[in-house]
Image (cartoon, rainbow, N blue to C red; front, top):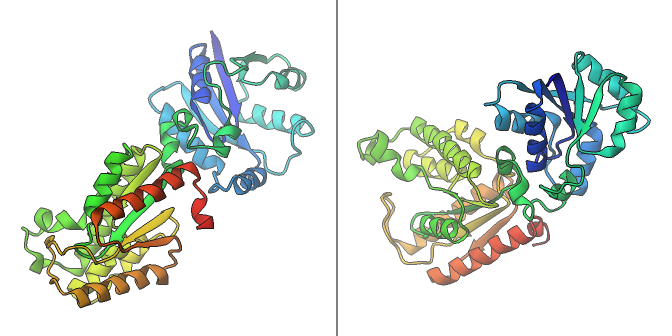
Length: 350
């Protein structure tokens, strides 16, 4: 049994192979330090080439900390190697930084044979233990995950999956069947979805009396909607569907109260969704609890209003679906979701 072990790596991103290696190390040490190490500039360039949102060291350390939080003798730390020469030229500096970070280590656990001579040369007296370097149990690398993360979805750690899950917003005005469509898509793709929270707010907080709405209520709705969205993301299976967002909340705030709530704008994020499917108001009117009436001209005007609210706030990937029957709308939504899973960047060429 070793006293202090170190598991260094880029964890770019952390996957099940990494986790298995860390747990194996934990069985052999009284204390294990998981060292997330990378050159931020190089990592940023790799994400750009892989067409991924940037994954800073701190985020990767957070994912690992969440996964390992119940194991008391494992601690996640960070080593920023930005500015030192790349391996092998920067080996001496890197080893000094590691020694300063974990001065009492006895053993280093790695997954690559090529680093063994380097560690033995620059860290005399420290053992180097290589585990499953052939990746026989989890045949995947961080590079492979970045290149095709949906193909390797099962290897990605649960805490990191919300980062990689594709996100589809279903939006529209009253009685455009978006809520039902969102549920259908969630069930068809065997994944999570987030319902429109504002639909239930009146019954939960206002005694089901819509006349009692205040401007502040809509801010609460936006906050509750974000919480609900985060829960859906945590349980997503490659893709998640969202019924409404803060733009819709602001839209109803204007319609109900005759004014906007500036705080709602802080919940609006044009980069949050891969695609926005906007349902047209040309299906049969079905009252769903709001006060607006079945007037086709008014429905179309409100649709335009909501559409321009999205455009004004910088939303790009908006696809309008105006088919008058539910079946065709579902088919089109499924087709778009399928393409998004097959190629997460397809909307850039849409």
